[in-house]
Amino acid sequence: MIKYKGKTSGLLKAFKISIGLILLGIVAFLGFEFIPGFFKSGTGSPSSSKDVVDLSPDQYQIKSVNLLGLDKIIETSHFSIYFHSGNEDEARQLITICENDYPSLSKFFESTPKTEVLLTYDADEYVNVFNAAPPWAGADRYKDPKTSAGSFCPSCTKSLKNETEYIYMLRPGMKSFAHEISHRYYWSNYKNLRFNNDLTWLNEGLAVYVQNEIAKGPGGLSSTSLPNIKKFTLPESFSELNQLQQTGSTDMFYDLVGLMAYYISDRSSDPGLKKFIDDLNQTKDLDKTSQKILNMNSNQLFTGWKENVEKVAAGNPKDFLTSFRSQTQK
Ligand SMILES: [Zn+2]
Image (cartoon, rainbow, N blue to C red):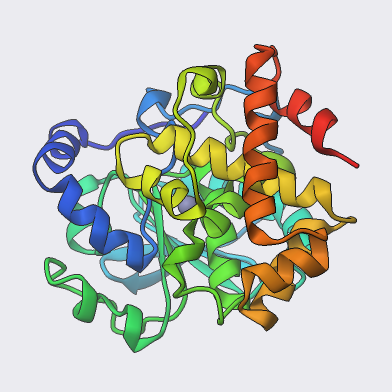
């Protein structure tokens, strides 16, 4: 079980109601983001049978450190977790989750630079010190002037002295970790794609795919919005698909882009999704890459995905993803 001690509710409400929309624009560019189902998870405790973590409390050494008021560190060669004294159990749990997921993550992404995770249970600290907004369970930022908080987040008053690669976690959770680490590797590995907001659907779709398919933890596709796809007006283009993220249909957005990731994976030879993104990073041309990897242009990709989503939705399947994949796999 993961305990959640954050005093977040009032602050979260305030953010959501008053400046949530403004923040959306800013944070979308910075890479902060909403995790579907984050608020619905109540205590934050995982609930799936896949949640079992082989927690080995003594396996990792805790050392003292000082980074933005975080005074402890626990690390492996792949991850460093900075946290407060008092959250030792949670930090151990998180590093165990990270390491449990790492073999499959590294197999998929191939290039997996070391990642530092800043962990807090305090929403005020998350906002004020880590420069992250609480509707987002995690955020990543990179050592690049184009994405520095000072340039693009005027409301952020403090910044890290040494901005390397971090993930900010409001609380540990397999759901947010697997999702955020996907963004971390995407941004690190695909430098030609990471500033392209037209590809938000791909970056987020990959993260949902990773949550759902590759990481050992739960998360990914939502069990609440998938059954409602039938009643939902599907977007007409990739651009409209991207817009769903910021129009209050966030859970649906993540499910739809996740299905797009599966569609790309299923319509190409294994490992199709990775191959598709690798190629797109080279060509920077969605049509060219779609043609080469999927033997269809980008319009056909969108239309094919949409038609399959509609067809599966019409059948009201119990397991949407299984039905979708049985239909889309070659
Ligand atoms: Zn995301």
